[in-house]
Image 1 (cartoon, rainbow, N blue to C red):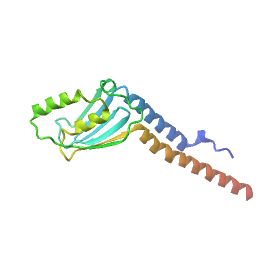
Image 2: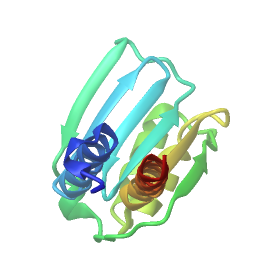
Image 3: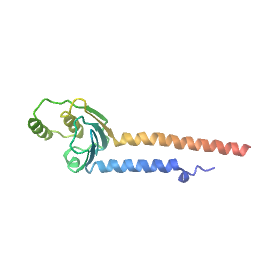
Image 4: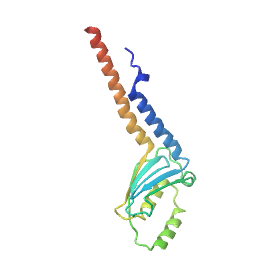
Length: 165
């Protein structure tokens, strides 16, 4: 009995999810897309997704944006490493903090440095997790291929038992 993958919901679901992740990966090098809802934020940029908790309320409950300068400002790393950052909450006045942030931003060459620098302005209870798209793709592809293998084995056993009986 042939496996007939084209009739499998598992097969097509995995293809669809991995195609979406691959598209997001390619799109992340063209610019940065972000959303912030309350204290939570998510960004798709520079080969990965950053999820964060910013312990500073914002006036609007939902904010979104698109940054095209991310693609040209930082050096491109196709397979970036995961990164965990915590807030540092420097004790500076708002205007001094803003001026310091912009001056330091000119020296930054990588997105990793940018994430660490940006988080240094937020309270210590804030955090950010950067997950590269290759890691997300791997986290989907491994269980998906395991499910396809299990399905093929189960179908092979069913076909073998049906022929004997």
